[in-house]
Each structure stands twice: as C-alpha cells, then as structure tokens.
Length: 444
Image 1 (cartoon, helix red, strand yellow):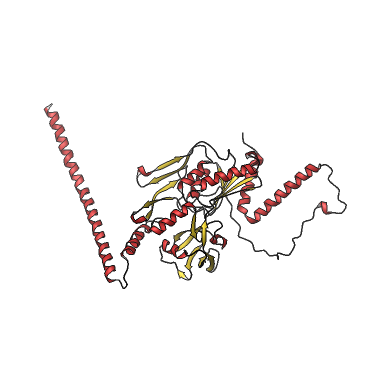
Image 2 (spheres, rainbow, N blue to C red):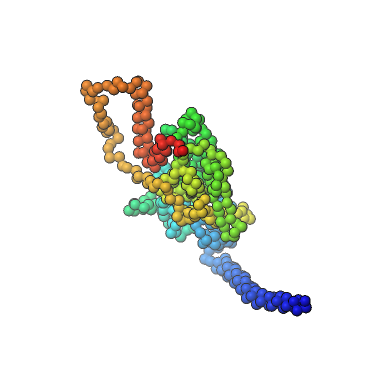
C-alpha cells in the first residue's frame, strides 16, 4: 500500500513539474503580448499629443479620437464602423422607416462609394441611379480616400436642396453627372397588388414595418380577388432590397414555412452561434411562390431568398444577389454614440454561406435594358389583320355569346400581360411561371 501511495505521489509530482514546464513559456508569451499592447497604446498617446501640440492648425481632441476609433473599425471590414451620436440617431430613424437623404443604400469598394440599391420612389430611384453604380464625386468633390460615413455626410443636406453626383456605370464609356433634389425619405416597406390572378408583394426594405405590412397587404389581395382560391400564386419581389433588420427577415421567411431551419449564425466563439427554426403556419395557405432577386438584393433579402430556396418552398428567379453574408451588431456607447461591429456570419438552411457569392437564382432572368422608342409618339402602330377583318368572312356560329365574351376577356388579360413584359420583364416572367404551375394543378 505504501508503495502505491508513493508511486501516486511521484506521478503527481511529475505532473506538477511537467505542467509548470509547459505553462511557464505560455505565461511568458501572454505577458509579452500584454506588454506589446501597452507599448502600442503608449505610441498612440505619443502621436495624439504631438498632433495636438504641433499640427499646423488646432484640432479638437474629440475629433481625433473619433477618427482613430472609426479607422480601427473600418479597417476590419466594409460594414463595421463608429456611429457618432448624430449618425446613431439617424440610423434609429431609418429602421423606423423615415429619414432624410437621396434614397440609396451604399457600401465602399476600391475607395469609392458603390450603390447597393436605390430605394423605391425616392429621388435617387427617380433620377435613374442603379445598383452597381459607383459615385466618384459629389458637387465636383472627389470621394476617393474618404471614409464611407464621411462620403455619406457629403451627400446629406437640407430637404429641397440640389446635389450633383458623378456616376461611373458599367457599360457607359464615360462618367456622367446626375442632378438630384434631396427629400425626406419615407420608406414604404411593402407594396401589394394584384397582377391578374397573382398577388405581387414588393418588399423594398426590412424595417420594423415589413412583416406586419406584408401580412396586411397579402390579406388585402386575397380579399380583393374574392378569396384565396382565386389566387394562383405569390411573387415576392426583393429586387434592389438592401436588407435591414434580421428579425424581420426571419418573420417574413417564417410566414411561408411550416417547419425547419430559417437561418443560423456563427460567431467567433462556439457559444455565439444561434439557429432559428420556423413555426407552424403558412400565411399563403400553401400557394406557389416565386422570389425575384438581383444584384441589389442584399443581407436580409438573401436570408429570405436562401431559406425559401433551400426548403424548395419558392422558385428563385432573376440574377445573382449581392452577397452580404455577415451580421452586424449595433452596440450603444457612452455619449449616445454607437459601434456597428460584424459579429457573425449567417448560413442558409442547407449550411451554405453566401458571403461574397450571393444567392444564385434557380432560373437566371436578366432585366433587358430600357429600349429607346424608335417611332415618334404620335405615330400610330399598325394593327395586325386577321380572318375577321376580311370582307365576307364567315362568322363563328359554334360559340355562345357568353363563350365569346369569355374568350375576349381572356385575350384582354393576355394583352395586359404582354404590356407588363415591356414594363418589367422579370416580373412578367415570374407571373408566367406561376401560371404554368397553376395550369399543372396540385401534384399527387
């Protein structure tokens, strides 16, 4: 027994020695790292004091510190940044659905401001600004080298004032100027309407209004059609939707899913991960769904498109989405400022990250460029001739008046659909998909 105890004690002593031998260098490394951090902070303090004392003009200490903080955050990725008290207040206004400006969602690429998407019915959208445009100058002042927040600040101004932005667009040989009148941007998160027997839900952003307005709009279209049975399907239009609140993207996805994962997030630490599952209930009653996306569909839009696509709940058509697969957390700071920090990546139900890749549509359908009218507006279009126009042609006596009336109504609907193809080819394509699915009927 004594031998056993001694052996055990000997083993314990050896373990203590081995642990000490391993822990010693690790502790020294951590101490060295800490000392290096303090040295860097001392260097920052030295530079800060020299700027205050020797810079050619007097500068505010608070401005220097804010610039240092923002530089630290923006060096991480394009979506992390410092929000001054004024910017933090504006961001809160934007999530509530009303703010002042041009009406564009922007990011930064190659030192210039890149348009993620114009917002529906805003000065920028009406002026013809498109997703993917680069803004290089504001009122003749170059944006190259400016932080994104500083560039955005240059574009802000009093409501009713004019701003001239210089745009570089793919396919255009030269930069061109666009004049825009600033206005108060009132975001209408959802527009719902009927196109024939199809309910079209246009989601322009994900703010606090999105899910409730979408639910209200869809129910109104069911009622306008005389009941859900008269609706052949739903188009969820997410084109040029730059995203917004994650909880609203989850709510919109959940509205059409009965079960299964909607989205998962994974942070730096394992415990920072999260997974959100759908709850029972389908707002549409199982109607077929087509989701429309393009290069201006980002973030929360991609969560919805990815979730419905992975569950095979919707056919996704259009062009590849923007590819923003990261989650930002807004953290309040002292003095009413805030910090926007990228804290996680999100993944669709199948486990794919769309970061920098985007959501690929099931059916690629590009929007044709607007055509210049070759004919003068006052030139009448030549109507095509048919058998009925020929003198002495036979009447069709095999149909009743009601049957002829129904054929004429169906023809009118088809002609209206053809007009929609001229106005919005992608939407018309989506509606045609739903017509085809409706014609096939439910599967066994």
